[in-house]
Length: 74
Image (cartoon, rainbow, N blue to C red; front, side, top):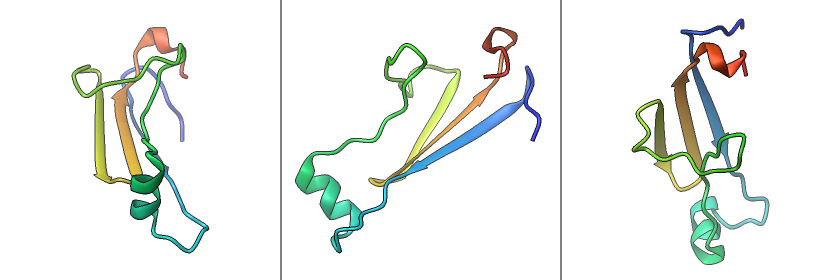
């Protein structure tokens, strides 16, 4: 797909467990947290109106944003 300024983009990240333990149980027992960061490594938060972050479960996070000209199509 082609992306450009003004386009909306949705990314999804999902953690899978290969240990035979459910992903939810593994995250709770290991204290793992999934989160999105910007290019500088700073956590994106739901309070930033540019990003819509959803967490349908412990093991998946989605990020939707509208690209700006200064994003240089990244």
